[in-house]
Length: 365
Image (tube, rainbow, N blue to C red; front, side):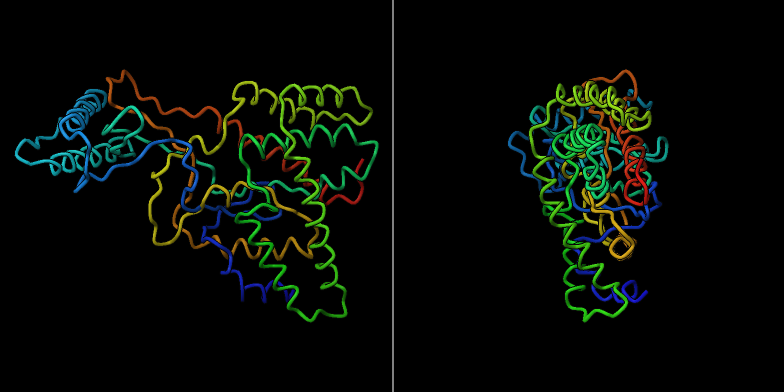
């Protein structure tokens, strides 16, 4: 198909590079990442060479307390850096311990500060998102909304998606972001084409118009303040409705449990600022693999995923949630546990798989 080959002329216009990954129940899927722009955690990773500390003695003492605490937990010998001046002593001790931890446990350590700590060793482990795209299709909501008998389903799903937008901070394709920039590039290219007599070009134009008009109107729906009680009432109304089915009800109820346990939790709460540094091959940002997108027919969807796949496949690293353990105080055990993420991402896959049926099925209910 011509559009799939021609698209390669402009896919690099998309804002940030990323890397390909496997598919997650979607028409196509690759992984994505980029520089962390969301500083939800007020932590900083320090580089001590030449670093101007406001209280050197206090910071140096704190650091070496954390050295002892880390070595006590993992049974490591404390580095002997007594012959080195500040800050070389800290840099050398950190480098040695990080190498030992990497060999023994598969992860290193960092020098970090936050509102309470000035210079503490901290270990970090990453949650594996599977290098997948978690793209939530919006067009199915247009199809569901066309059927008055599915109004209870529409209301329940709209509130669920509002939670993902407002609380989990999933990017939306009609707001500024990576997916938005992809669609803008596609629209620019399509508008520059002369079109053909097979109707393919016209179908793309029509789909772009619907993508924008419904996407903008639905965004207003999603931005209405989310309240857990309203979502619970919507689930109850759907359960009593004639259109109730087990599958969407189960998905909604699992999200309800997640919201009860983590009412204000965002994915970005587990992505510390400064953890992901420069990578010469590019970094896949969270908004590049977790986002709402239009979905839609082959006329537009194939072009979209061809662009995304080409753009993301060269990146060297993906921004993923990170679990931190501070050693400013003695630690009795390793505490790298993920709780929110192992529940969120599988639920997103279940949600997407259900919505895709409305995106592609010719007959809904």
